[in-house]
Structure formats: structure tokens, C-alpha cells
Length: 315
Image (spheres, one colour):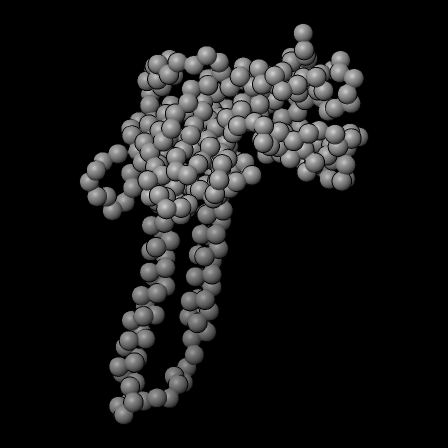
């Protein structure tokens, strides 16, 4: 990150380079369409202005192939740009399976991050270079938008909705991250430093950021503290869904719909349990909306995601 004025942001990922290439190519394409038309409009306006003596008859011979070409060629080019941009979009929306998941909570006016090991940071985010990273984000108050110009990625963060964003930074350095959505009076101060570190530097940072428990371990404590294990344990007398292996699984709902149990579904099941009732179960789950803090919800979601069949039973 430099204090000098830059006309174009640095590139810190392969996606940034691809996007810049796309923008430059599309700019040239638009210029090739607009400039000749603009020049001809000006020339014709001067040449055929009122009162000037010129031949105003249409040309006797029509060159059909030329008239068709200046319609078909731009159409095919625009179609090519559509395919190109769509492929970039799908690449950005489909993370690989080996991502490092970091949880983010947006709040007026700060970014609070928590790593899988439990390390926390505010208005700073440390990540390892070359490692696919997936941010799982939530907003505590209003609409924010997480934006790292050097990565050319941006994602709105909406209250009550779990947003995710993935990237792979390939250039170590310190970059700027900010909020790209006007979120209140002090919106302009909602920013921070984005650190892309080598694997050794990142490991050293994790070690220096002492924590007692990982996200999963903290979530397990909460799972028992708030009595979740009392209903969801296999030995429980309460007929409640089994959470082992829930994450990523298709869940049939009482409404007849089927949803994938992602972070949004798990969070809603904790905070809005009546929103999507699992088929075959009574709507008896109480809400924990005004009981759990945002960071506790994150820990519980991380723990439930980690559950595998026969790996979490209450001992």
C-alpha cells in the first residue's frame, strides 16, 4: 500500500490481471464503435449543414455486405465479451474445495475478522499468499460492501444474509481494503490494511496472535452451554434433526422444498428457526437471536460445519 496517488490499483491476484485485460479490451471495443460514429456525425453535420450546396441524394448503389458486416461483427464481438465476462463471473462464484475460511462481521464502522484458529483482528486481515481464501461475511447493522481494489473483488454484506467471497492473492504485500457501500456518517473511515504474507510469515502471525481455542472448539463449548446437545444428541428424547454431516447436505423442508445446508441455512436455523422447518420435525426450536452475540453465532456455525457422523456425540 502506497501513499502516492495511483491512477490504477495494483494487481495482487490472477483474477485482477484477467479483469484488467477484460476492461482494457472492452474499452477498446467501445472506442472502435463510438469514435467512428462520432467522427462521421461531426463530418456530416458540417458537410450537410443547412444552406450548403451538396448532393443530398442517396447513393445509387448499395453495398449490402458492408451494411450487414457493421451489424454482425459488433454483435459477434459483444457476444464474445458476454461469454468472457460470464466465465470470469462463474470463476469468482465457484470457490475450490480447499479454501481457508475466514469469518467477517461488518459493523459501523469496522471490519471484524476471525480466523479458524480463533485469532481475531479489527480493520486488518492477514492471509497467506497462494492459498485460496473464502470470506464468510455478515453485517451487524446496515448494508456494507467488502472491497479490496488490488484483488478486484467486492461483495455486498447485508444484515441477516450470509455473503461469501473467495480469492487467491499471489503477490505478498500490504494493500487497502474498504467499504464500497455508503453505510453511514463515518463510512469513509471504514477501511483497513490487507496483508498478503508468505506461508512462514502467516504462520508466525497466527502464533503471535495468542488464542485459547479455535473457532470449532469455542463453538463446541457454546453448543453444550446453550443446551443444543440436549436436543440434537442421538440419545436425546427430543425428536430433533441430527446435525452430524449436515453441512453441504440437501435438507427436505416441511414446505416441500429442498435446500442445501450452507452457512446461511445453519445461521437461520439458530436465529430464525421457524423460517425453514425440516420435514418430519415439529417447530419447537427456540430462537437464539437475542441471546447469542455475532461472534458466538460464527463459532456455532463453524462447529456445526465440522460435525461428521459419529464424531460429535455427547460423551
